Image 1: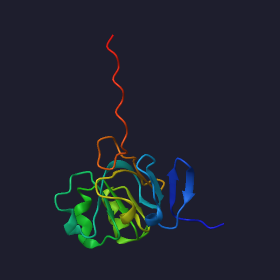
Image 2: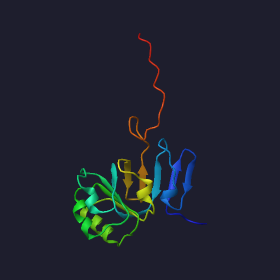
Image 3: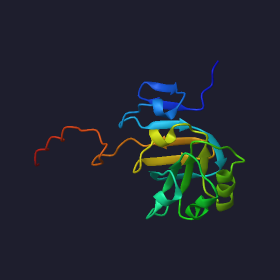
Image 4: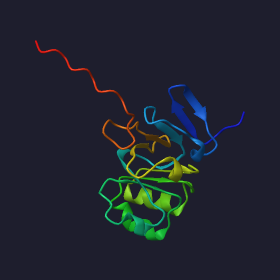
Length: 156
């Protein structure tokens, strides 16, 4: 039996995926990814995909950072971020240690997560179990599914 560190959940059920980049979750289904929980906590917020600390200029408090890797220069962002999702790393990585020191929920070891999630996605981070869930698109958002308007109800 081959174990994957990544799962997706769609209307058809739960499926293994080798890398987040292969996941094609639809806006109405959302997307579930599995990684390694390295700093406990559960948080919901807007995700922001960044490659380096300078890309976080103007970041709103509570934003969930999504990045390939973190280093010592990322420390100041931890006081503003609501959570951390990292492609590489583990429980003893620098980012994980800093996350625990700041009390920042964090999940690492999700290859391709920076391609699976987009800045502005609504993200639920369960850093107790290593789960990341991208919420389905909400009506009115850029990625929302187009639907027919509801019929008008007759006046009573």
